[in-house]
Length: 98
Image (cartoon, rainbow, N blue to C red; front, side):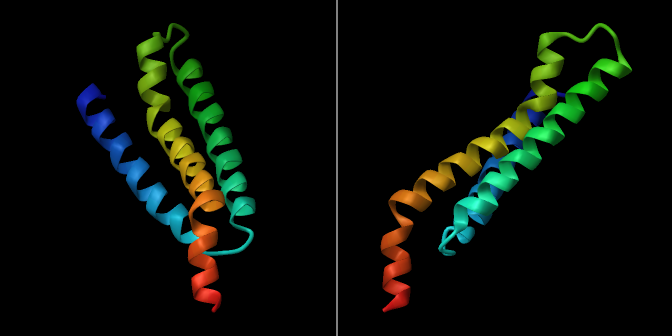
């Protein structure tokens, strides 16, 4: 896969996951869903890494990196959104409550 295409795809994944996880921040217990999403993405990353190694016994580090980059960007978006959920979104939730 082309490196530029993978990087563009990873940025798009980051933005989509950040927006959707930010919507979850409106819920009071948003962290449960975000931690579950991170665990799911971690397992998918392990499966993709295992499949890459099983397909070819000699896998370069760059192949592995570009295979995992979209998943790692989604995990980063979940973590950023979770930190925003603890920092900024309580103020927004209180405004909706009143």
